[in-house]
Image (cartoon, rainbow, N blue to C red; front, side, top):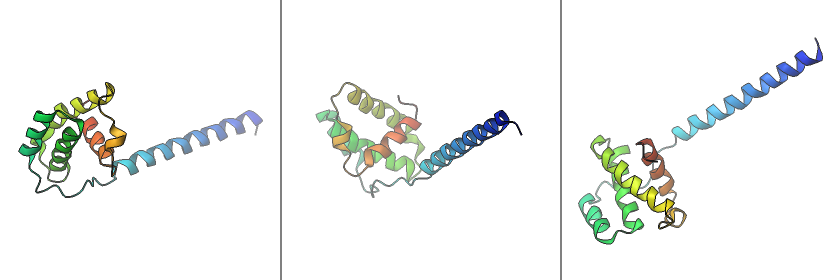
Length: 123
């Protein structure tokens, strides 16, 4: 075999290995369980009222946790428009640097919530 053929096969094998690694990583990330605690007894209306009165990113994140729990764990798809709307507000706060998502992310909950928000189409 020519040296150029050997190099071409080697590069092709490296590309296939890189693609397989990337696909496996994406699949593993998508299979990660949604676990932000048990919010089955959380009062959505109280959280929504608290956010409307205070307007703080922390109250907004609390409301989003409840909404995401209802969607991902309880299967309530009627909350999707609210997740998109409130999620966009949180993303806008982060872009405007009025919300520090790193400080709010105590248990890794914010990352899980952001994944749900982005899956609804918020940018």
